[in-house]
Amino acid sequence: MRLPVILFLLFVSLTAMPQKLIRGYAVAYGHGFLSHGDEITITDTMSSTDVSYHAVSDDSKLKYATASSLFFGFPIEYGYARHRLMIMPAVDINTARWFLKFDNPETMPFNLGSTDSLYFKSFTIMPQVGLMYKFHFFAGKLHFAVGAGVDLKIPLNILSQNTLVDNNKTEYDPAITGYMLEYAPASIFAIASSPGIHLSPRVGFDIFMSRFLVINLIYYRNKFNSGENNPKLSGYFGGGVTYLLPFGKEDDIRVLQQYKKN
Image 1 (tube, rainbow, N blue to C red):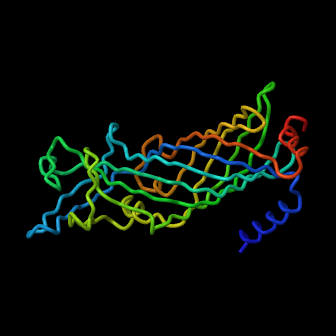
Image 2 (image 1 turned 30 degrees about the vertical axis):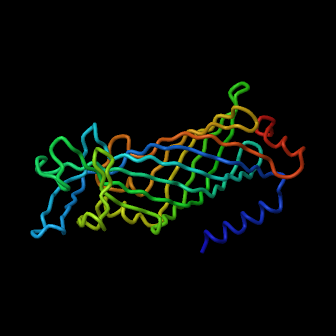
Image 3 (image 1 turned 180 degrees about the vertical axis):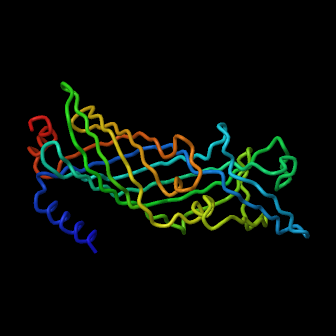
C-alpha cells in the first residue's frame, strides 16, 4: 500500500512544480552474464521410443550464458540543485542464450553431431518503471552524475518465446519438431521461461556532453542472475544515450545548469 501512496504524492508534486522537471528520451544496450550450470532434458516425442538427451548449461569460459538487452525509455527528472529523482517508464527487449553441454557429444537431438552446438534461447519483452536517485557534481567544467535505483520489470509472456537454436542459427520450433523440454522448477531454464514480475537493482554513471546530450554507463541485475551458479562478471553492463528537454517556458532551460550554481 505504501508504494502506490508514495508514487501518487510524487506525481502530485511533479505536476505542481513543472519548472523543476526535465524530460527526455533514452536508448541503451546492455550485455549480460547470466546464471548457468542447471540441467535440462530434451525428449524427441516424434520418435517411437521417445529418445531423451541430457545436458547442462555450459559454464566454460568460451560459452558463458549471455544476454543482449536493448532498452528504450522516457526519463522524467525532478529535484533541486545537485539532487535529482528520476522516474523512467521504459521497455527492455532481452535475448538470453544458454549453450548446452551434452553427456554424449556424439549423440545430439535433431541429428546434430559432435561438431555442432545447441543453445537454449529466451526472448522476452519487459515493460518496466524505474525509480532512481542521482547526485550531480562537477570536475572543472565537466558535468557528471552518479545514481542508484531499482526497476520494476513486467515480462509480457504472450510476446515471449523459448526455443532451441543450433550453430547454423536454425531454430527448432516445438510444435514442428516435436521435442519436449524438462528441467527443475527452480532452474535457470524455468526462470527464463517465465521470469515473472520482479525488481531489478541498477546503478549508473552519467557524463554530460552538453546541456542536452548525456552518455549513460549502467550496471544492473535481473531475474536471469538469480540462479545458484554465476560467473564472476554476473549481471548486465551497458551504455546508452539520453537527450534531455526542459518542461515549461523557454527560460526554464536554465534549470539544466543549476547543478553547477548550487
